[in-house]
Image (tube, rainbow, N blue to C red; front, side):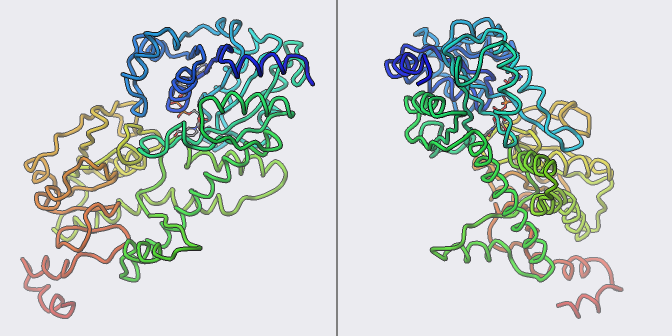
Length: 467
Ligand SMILES: NC(=O)c1ccc[n+]([C@@H]2O[C@H](COP(=O)([O-])OP(=O)(O)OC[C@H]3O[C@@H](n4cnc5c(N)ncnc54)[C@H](O)[C@@H]3O)[C@@H](O)[C@H]2O)c1
């Protein structure tokens, strides 16, 4: 057995080991809190001073972590944060949870992982366990992280332990949190897997060891590619249903009653967040290096990426029913977070819809109780916007209201009753209503007919024919 294994194992089991988490974002802060709650003295390291200060004040900036929980761990001295990687010298285990975005060319941007690993390497010492959690391509731990840590002269598997364990947190999910989502762990050798498994077992209910970091890296990419491809399928079916005059929401819900062999995925305005739109391209990039073309990933990317344009076309069709062009119309967007009940706008398709509408001359406003301000630098419209209060007057003032994120706190009856025209991309307003255009569903009953009847004699015969 590698020297140091029994010592670290004993320290972990007796909670005498000291833990570090690099990157205190949506993934890292909940993990640091769980480790501290499990009894480990924990230090979070982040380059963002505001986050470090907030943690040290006991004030949470991540909705899934309560200020009360964080505050009590900080005041007990179990958890603290720093910007200084020198803290690594006093740690026994370290988990790296920094971003893994894409470059504009859709290639992996590994600069955050490189910087974090180099920060750790500068203070790496014998007997340490290093675990990478950032979602990344298969091979990263062994081909990218290991050589950078070994450049210190210490050898992985001999002097320190190394593993990969994907984070599967689902922000805003009230049922599944860090503690009750099984943790997949793959070390570079058996001791690394066992040590990382023991560390997580202190804070997480169920551990799933796998044979290598490569397998663990691939597990996460399979999970997220599965979602991206199935959402792509749901979106294509929605486009098809719109063409065929069938309600896609009714179809998916009825299909979901099958007790086996079917899992419902729903259409929407496009993919968002730091995972589903990005992670599959880490896999296709890696596969391409072995001459393999990932056709499902590319196709799903094309379909999902085109959805914001389809939504804009639906808005144009809805406005057309009231004889209005997009250019000059007032469009109120409901929800700019990438999914319901959270505040994260990274890669949000709402921003794409708003950008295209602005380019076409619409006056775009938004209402999102979770995102009070949209900074000019966060979207291509490049002006700062503030969330509008959701009142009947604000809804009435818009030429079209478009539901892009179905936050539960929004009063959809108020929206339906007050807005002249609604485009609903989430089936938030169920059933058919004369002023509601739902994505992937037939247009409202007698729309077109009624509008043409209202003001044009020339249109009347046509309208009767349609009726
Ligand atoms: N957000 C999710 O739902 C989710 C779910 C599963 C996996 N992941 C993966 O987890 C990783 C982290 O995602 P996130 O959503 O927590 O990102 P995030 O942006 O919320 O947090 C990352 C943190 O890392 C910090 N950071 C950046 N560079 C650093 C460095 N060199 N040293 C120290 N800190 C640094 C940032 O300041 C930030 O606070 C990504 O690989 C992501 O794909 C995210």
